[in-house]
Image (cartoon, rainbow, N blue to C red; front, side, top):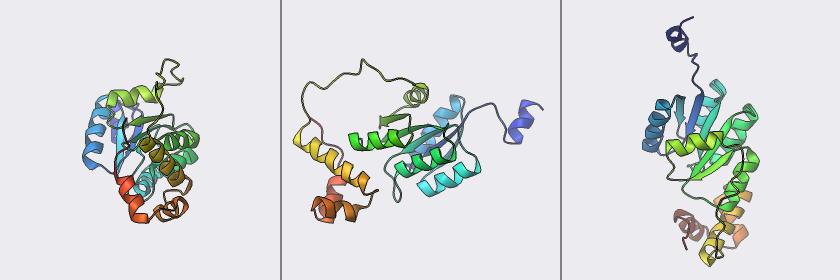
Length: 188
């Protein structure tokens, strides 16, 4: 069979990649960039659609946004690993926290990148198999705001993304919690 015939039948030598991100423009730009780098890319804009895509054709690689309306990207990571333990998953987020990074890795992601991340950084993350002992260690402790952010996200992860339950456990009004979650992480 020729390469053209393989492509027509949906078979290529290019690795398959699934992008699950609710930011449609970002998804399109990233899909185009990764296609140019040799991947056969499919996209979804929420976890349920991502799961349906993965069931049709389990991807070799996946890029999953952490925070999306509805189910979180952590659920997508878990489902992808359940379907195929060899899928190499990179989690992207604009809401980076230690708690969610640890959970993503425990669930099977191979890397966790803060947005904005570019296509080259994502491809590099797919193939990184070891930690980097040269990673700089912070010279000063986290600020009070950062500690609060980390704690909120740890509890939110424990509550599987349930805002009402998280607010109850934190003894915080639900709207106050939503306002805090809507903000980007506190910087030093």
